[in-house]
Length: 95
Image: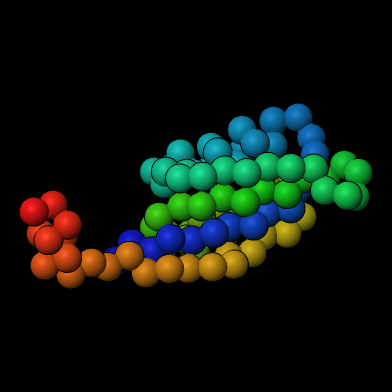
């Protein structure tokens, strides 16, 4: 079952760090639904909020691979929302 996950990453603000992070998602065939990046108050660090739809196994694998990125300071899986609809809800919505 797919779930919405919000990943919060803190990284060093270096060249190509976004490319390294997005490459990990590409290799695992996980689509980034929303991406928000900003520089923190501490100069030289950036904060990423990434929203994705995936299952728990893929998330644990993804987090392990993201931790290998040298510039990554901290990673948190902060929120999860189950995506499950009843078939009658879908039918009534489009009727």
